[in-house]
Length: 288
Ligand code: PMM
View (cartoon, rainbow, N blue to C red):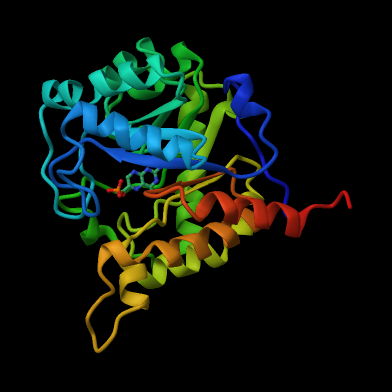
């Protein structure tokens, strides 16, 4: 079984966990592909997150800007207005919060409010102030493979020398950039960025190569939950499986990702995924 790497700098309750972590998504947006508009009201958002924690989620990933293909950017003030009250309320409930943002200003406000992890889908490319901020804060950071903003990203879904090779190379560059900015390498989590400048075939290649990515020696995060490539896989008569019926396939990916050594999976509904990481842990455990 490939070894699972865990980032430093997490709160002790998370650092102690001896299995793949389950991060539950909380999109405080009107337009995310799977849950857009459902949790714009902070009270509802918090209720949803607490439900996910009761189901066994280890972390709640709060995001205020949709990254679905084609999405337009929003002003930073709007992003802050969406996420901050929710982060504050969740921290007040002793929930471990991750902040899903490409903006240093939003990351800083969330960290000041008590967020424990920064999740940057742009891998530090979206805002030049992000990596220096992460270095200063000392928080662990997720750097995802990214090739451009949602509006235009599918134009960059070309990998002439092989998707795994190019993604690994580009992630290594992001890691180097983080270290050059002063981020401790043991705080950096890498993420292949499924669906971001990638078609279904690219996503499956990356998932199949996950143990190879784990060999980079960094903790890995996998975000496959409900994504379009699952809808395409399960299509009937050319009709993709609807978003709300992709959770079983998500659980299957979680099991395989956990067995391949992922540190964390990012999912919309913790149910099933929490059991899946336990199954994978028992399956791959070496001390029996
Ligand atoms: N995917 C989405 C948003 N944030 N963060 C990380 N680290 N990895 C991902 O794969 C990822 C992400 C898009 O999905 P959503 O709109 O359902 O949140």
